[in-house]
Image 1 (cartoon, rainbow, N blue to C red):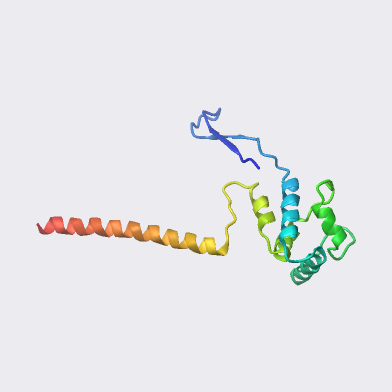
Image 2: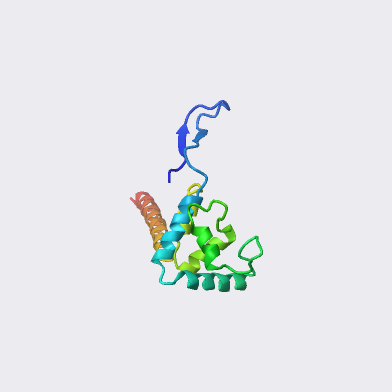
Length: 159
């Protein structure tokens, strides 16, 4: 999936750094989302029926209804419609995307969904911890450089 094309150019507003947003991205992420959901289902250790049961259990705990229609539960037929590439009239309700991801034990659909947004990346909890460590390391490096400069200034005054 392509992203925004950002071109810096003089705009009519007179602000030289204003971005012109190119619209080469398809905002219809449903085909890619359905594909990611199908991939998650194939990779899951759970069957289609088990995933429906898991979604329904999660929905019940969250107080959610699966569809806007008469159905009170996600069935394999509803899940099949959500996954079918040719089924444009049936898309997973947004409130059900996290439930599907949890039931299938995959963040791949959520990653595809997040690609439609600017400057967002889904990372694992482990990667988040590594990122937190790296940020702390950078802060430590800055503090060490500042400490060294202060020490050098102190030594200049002593000489």
